[in-house]
Image (cartoon, rainbow, N blue to C red):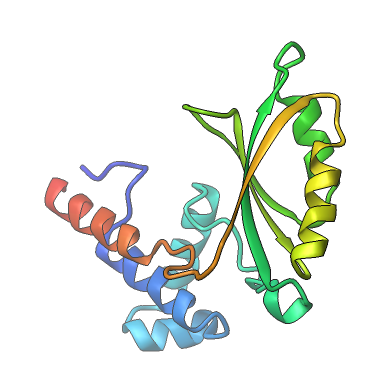
Length: 165
């Protein structure tokens, strides 16, 4: 019996199709995949309900918006009140795109964007202008060789699910 957390090969093909062409629509997907429209809709609903597909929202690239500089800040924080206060502070900064709790040196890693290096300095100052941040270590991204992706992971999960069935 298939696990509730996996995806099967049809799910993987459906995700790949919508990733490649977000405007394909349910009818277009049913034609492209050779399955009934109702099957496509039911699969999409199930994938969304299970959190596999988080959103059909557009992916926005900060560069054309005027934010070509990307950096990663590792933050050491005072943890007496937990992560919530510093996460709330960071979430209020528009240039903060991601916040992750980490192990090792540092407590949080934050992906940020800026208009230029001087603006990056301003963003970092805003990040550390919090009583909870002890230290920040920033690395500027020179070249992105591989943007965030999940396609290969979905394919592997579908193959694994297919062999487990």
